[in-house]
Length: 94
Image (cartoon, rainbow, N blue to C red; front, side, top):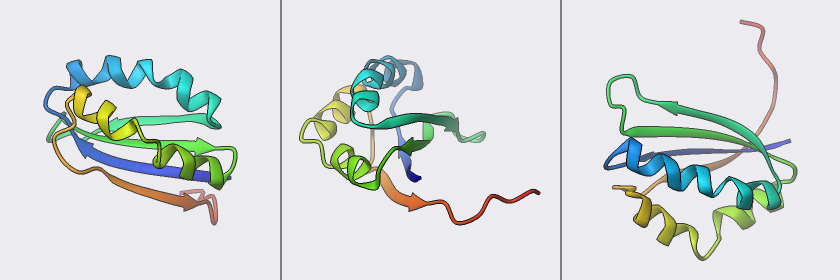
């Protein structure tokens, strides 16, 4: 299974969230199997996303979508996002 880890800051989480939610259909049709949304406890406008993907190739296609950068700007992403494609190595018990 492939994963994508994303970190970025947004101007206003409440403004950003509807854009993120709206893009769910496109993520799903592109192979996303869902994931997790986290916020920094010291800075609620710093967002972390962990997506699960059916295939690494589909995660790469999503990451390279031509409209993704424009969508992020429109949603209020205020810095360059850090995006990592990662693969599970081991599930830890504690």
